[in-house]
Image 1 (cartoon, rainbow, N blue to C red):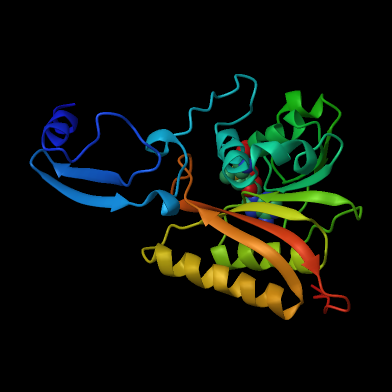
Image 2 (image 1 turned 90 degrees about the vertical axis):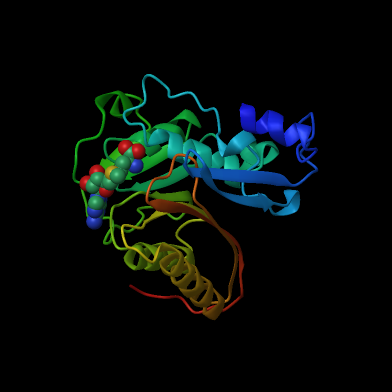
Length: 243
Ligand SMILES: C[S@@+](CC[C@H](N)C(=O)[O-])C[C@H]1O[C@@H](n2cnc3c(N)ncnc32)[C@H](O)[C@@H]1O
């Protein structure tokens, strides 16, 4: 690490890592050319060293996507709340579930999962007895029960369509928390995300729903961001949005 040593000699870097000090970011675009930036600890977007969570890919998981949902749980749900918010016996819906990487994470938490997708689910997941495979369109699927805790969604679709669908579920009180991806193949990704988040916030507000909304590009994300929304409470008499 010649750069690290040189920065230490110049007294720019401490001799030890400190989570309380600003972090310098150096991005090389050629051997002698780089962008330099810094982040302040209170505004740091990642609590993992170098932003890389060391998650082990479970050999029995049906797809590598499983790591995206696992990382999202680590990033969005404090460890001491897992037993309450990712609890055994909860019901979850996974829209665009196949082959089952995300469903696998929910099953690992001993949840019962409605896996919605026309594709094939991994037989190993079906054998757990915790998964109900619904061959249906995720945009038309209605939850068959009223006690769904989690909605997760990894459908490859236009961000605005997914954002509206997730908002419908929250407005209708069909789930308590949602984690979903907004796929961003377009050029103006930041603008796209900002507009979608503003739309979600506005619709929830209009319907008297107080929710916590957070979005991150996770280490395991590609051209996408992961959004977490937690419904905190709904105003009495808040308008229900019918689809
Ligand atoms: C990226 S894959 C999901 C991978 C999955 N999260 C995993 O970890 O294995 C996207 C899935 O969404 C499904 N999908 C796309 N549009 C859908 C729709 N309208 N309704 C249901 N599923 C849909 C596709 O069939 C595909 O299996």
